[in-house]
Length: 268
Ligand SMILES: [Zn+2]
Image (cartoon, rainbow, N blue to C red):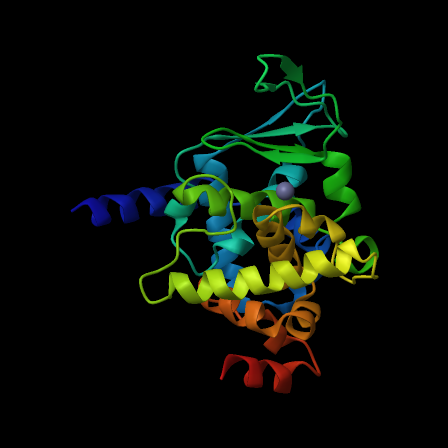
C-alpha cells in the first residue's frame, strides 16, 4: 500500500513539475561528464531531478539568487550518484544552501581546555550531518568540467551526504547487504594509506591531494573521480574502482573509449 501511494505521488509530481526541454538541455550540456549516459539513463535522471527538486529546497544565501538552471545543475549532480540506488539515501535533511562564492561557516567548537574556537577559513562546500548541503555557486561553475579543474564540488558534497547515511562521514557509507563491509574497509584503507604516503612524500598525484585529509574526504574525492574521470580511478586504484562500481551500481569507465578492456578486467 505504501509503495503504491509513493508511486502515485511520484507520478503526480513528475507530471506537474516536469522540467522544460530548453532548461534541461542547458543544464545537461554544461556538465560534460554526463555524455556517458544512455538515453534510458538520461530519462531516469530527468525524473529523479524532478523528484529531488520536489523533496529538497535549494535556497540562496548572501544575496545569491538561485536561477532555474542552477537548481537543475545542482540536482542533476546529486542524482548522478543515486541513479541506480534508493532515493532514501538522501532522507533526513531538506535544504541545499547556495552562496555566490566561498563562505565562512558559523560553527564553533570547544577544545580540551574549554576554549571556544570559531572557524574562520572560507570554504567552497560543506555537507552537514542531519543538516543542509552548503555550496559556493562560483565553485560549482569552476568545477563542472573535471578535465579543466581536476575536481567536482557538487559530486563531492553529495557523496559526503551518502556517506552520512549511517552516521559521520568516515568513508564507510551504508553498504547493500550483498557487499562485504570488511572487503570495503580493507580496500579503501589500503588505498588511503598508499595515497597519503604519496602526498606526504610530496609526490605528484593526478587525484586531488585533498583526498589524503581523512578517510571521509578520500571517499568523497574518489567518488568525484569515479563519475567525472572514471578511467583515472580505474588506473590509479582499480580495487577501489571495483568497490565503487558495486556500491554505486554503475560502471562509468566501461563507457569511455579505450578503458573498456581495463574495466572488464577490473570487474572480474
Ligand atoms: Zn569534503
